[in-house]
Length: 419
Length: 122
Image 1 (tube, each protein chain N blue to C red):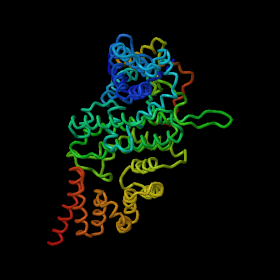
Image 2: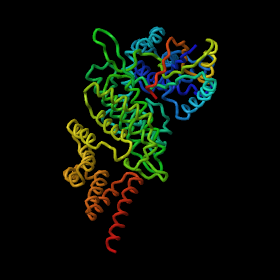
Image 3: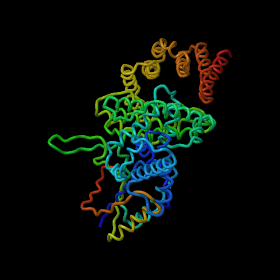
Image 4: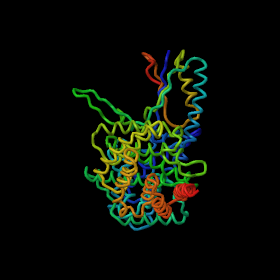
């Protein structure tokens, strides 16, 4: 096989499905991954000569399984006879080919593979790193780069997470409807975290992290393909597409944050926005609102506005109000306050966020927004205090630089007033 | 005779292409399209959104609206070209040229029975 697109893209696309199926056979993540690697090596030898198979994933599952079973057999000749249980999987090789007809497994295999990456006791970054390694097949080096940590540190993080999985009971039984829904929600949450890991990044290193956003969109689409009628998964994909569509406009040439209202909207990716709208429309037909759909709807209102001043803030506030009822959280209220400020002025918004001071005492955006509202109200001294606090809480140089810009403006205004 | 050249491929593979790879395929195909257009043989060119954006209406006593493409297939219809060709051989040649240097997927070449370009879209 030669040409523009190598075998790599095919192997990469097949990976989640193949590793998922091999995991079901071997019930051992390391063995499943090794078998996949081995099958890929065979593919690289075989496909260029004979052309790629009609169903590359089925081919890889079949070969991966046989290669691994061969290894087991060879090892067993040198060791004591294995227990029957270990051999019970060694049934007719034909059965593996029948795999491709059996798409019922496929969905649960893939969901399981995604699900084992997100046990609730693992911290978010470990869940994400694990999914990138196991499901997406990114190298440790690539993941380390995206997380801006050393390769050794990332290797250790992934090894630790994997051994944790190996010690726990993997969920191999076919899930019931309730369990399936729970797994789906956990996986969707993990994908959203993955996206935010890339999206929240800013400053000089931001370009390194865009691949995280792209990978999150790929995984979200994969999930939607498995569950094509789930409105919340449609909402998730739409949300990620709307957000990612703005990537090129979010930072200026110096790497400084450009706020939504100041972004050059001609840089927004119209294809992604159109797809987001298409998915959101489909989702809304189900009349089963959920957090992802509402957040997507909000992002969609922004995407729809040709200019910042055309933004339908009333629509945005309505969506946030529903979201607040569905999933009460101080962060949601804070976001609603931004819409309220646009609709009814800074004083109303300030009153709305006053009760959030305690729950959001460590939240950068709370103080950024509070400072901006106070500044609009001409309460410069209080604004300065809020901005100082925001700078102390900033996670990236770009965030800090943005707030410093406000402080400079306040200082300039104070000086002008003195003259 | 007008022919449709229907492009099928595994959309998960196509989604896995990097932007550079995607751009390279588009640019390569565009050169062929420009040639066909210069000969006055190129009709509409369409690239479809992923099948996850699709909705299917299945007829029945109570027509069903379903999410997703109408069929679960390994390769999906991702787009098509309409090309004016004197013979099937010409159509195959055009398809071959469009598909040159690509490894995956398939083009289905299918003569058109009716063609009404309309003027409501685009």
